[in-house]
Image 1 (cartoon, rainbow, N blue to C red):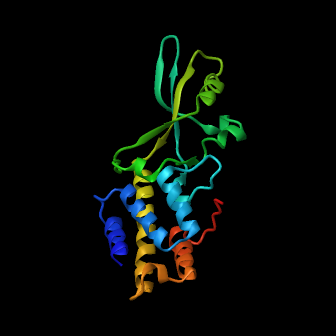
Image 2: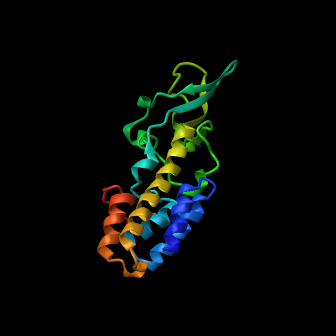
Image 3: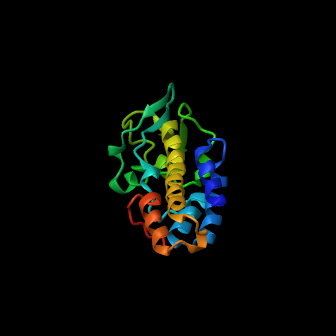
Length: 202
């Protein structure tokens, strides 16, 4: 019970780091094993691979911007229409997928936007496609990540853990964590951590 209380407190305390919260959850999973919960914790702690399916809170539409340089002028922060890209190249950018560990997004607030550079190969490939016939060349391109989206990602992780821990505490009663039925833990993981969506990382 003490561990669940610590997790609930960390999930509701903005001063407690996401890393600390997730590591406490690892201890919880060790006492009441669930492979899907552990897989989610590992991904949130270590980051997601290129082939991993991402939770919905890590996927969104982001605008692309660039700097164009010419012989006599430079255009900064220009919106880049993605319809110019091939469908295969557009998939690299749209939708945006945030794969870094959850803790890496801490310290940002709603007023602080971030940038994710385009893959260099795309910048080179399309450097003359946006202003054909002129001397303006795409020098640098990036996706703009609104600070609100990064805050939302952190809030989603905290809230999912909080709901999961609250339900386990309710189900626990006077029992210890290792006495909880596997079905109870699995149902709570499915309901609160994965929000009813089946994701298989095995």
